[in-house]
Length: 288
Image 1 (cartoon, helix red, strand yellow):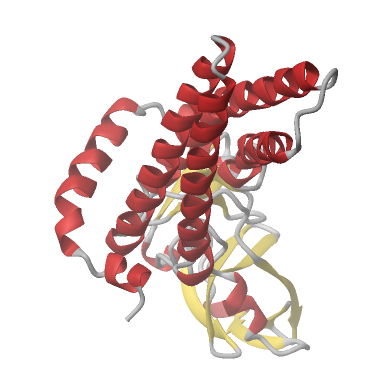
Image 2 (tube, rainbow, N blue to C red):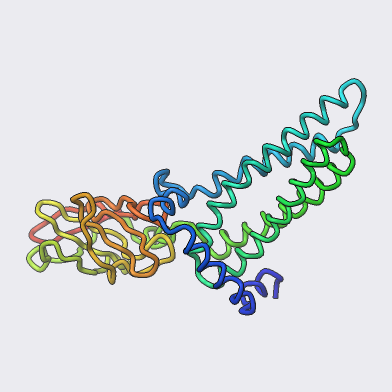
């Protein structure tokens, strides 16, 4: 059994994880703030986009630190490395904030791995903060040493983060796999005469669960599994937001417009997948 698999199953971490989750949810109470940190406005998770800057800056500083320092370039080289370390420290704060917000809406196993990911990155940030202070006070050898330690810790954190995404599927669109199961062509969904107005019903398209919503001349066929953590949207509530009917995931509250699947509220950060529709001889049909 791999170390990361053992971390997934380490229920002893839940005591820390659960308390920290409640504190994060208690601090970030505004839904608008949570949505902004999730990347709802961007249509893409914000955390991985922000991570590029600190990691890129720190990796560049490591390269400069490894280059031989020859006069008269040595002073400029040290200055450039110091600037890069400072940029990394400053940009790591918003990256950590978005990551913490995402982490607070994950399941238990994901939060355990995410906790280790956060600890490794926090150690790296502490090391780089010390490295910046050392460089600014002229102790460049100590600054380089702390930088190397910090980069090692951040690299380990990145490896754990990769496991969190690629193995555990955290903050990735869970409904895409369902969409890919549907064969090409039109598939029957429901007789139009059996489809009630403004009432969400659940049906299957080629073995894949979908929700169907009829509102006047508009009919929406949307994948039923929430893209955040595969929650059953068919069991969610239908609410009206800004004059548009929306479905709220019963698990974590992600909200999507029933007219087109657009994301309204997180923790999901991507739109929900909808299918093309047509009516033939009174039968509603759908296709990818």
